[in-house]
Image (cartoon, helix red, strand yellow):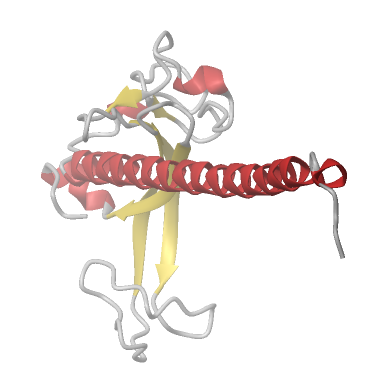
Length: 200
């Protein structure tokens, strides 16, 4: 059987173009997957750096509270007289408002930079609470406060009073695309203020 060359002309070119198109589509989709993975790893790194800075800011705030010698920074119960970044209960700025964390306001304190990221935080006085360590009135016996209580869940029924503050820390990632916030409650002995600090 003789097939003329005229009838074959162009078929090889068409097949080559179809194969080239398929290969181009496969290459483009694999490149898109690689770009997506790179973005995800960058976002993960940004998030980890922001969390690290926020945790460092929290430790810094707790160190300040551990050495607190008076309650003057919190101001008055009517929200007046407080130092920048220190608030009485009910007067703390809104956590999710961007204006709270910008560089122009005096609503928050700046911590020490970690890997070029400066955590920002505020401290809010929440009042005196009575901690019932064990006993029948809602046990918090796993709480070890001032050496009272039992971390293993023992049956201690000691009670203690504690001053309570809320610390909210925020840190942005290096590019500003990610943000981590930590909220923590800190308890310290009311006698700490009178004794000059470092009992909490």
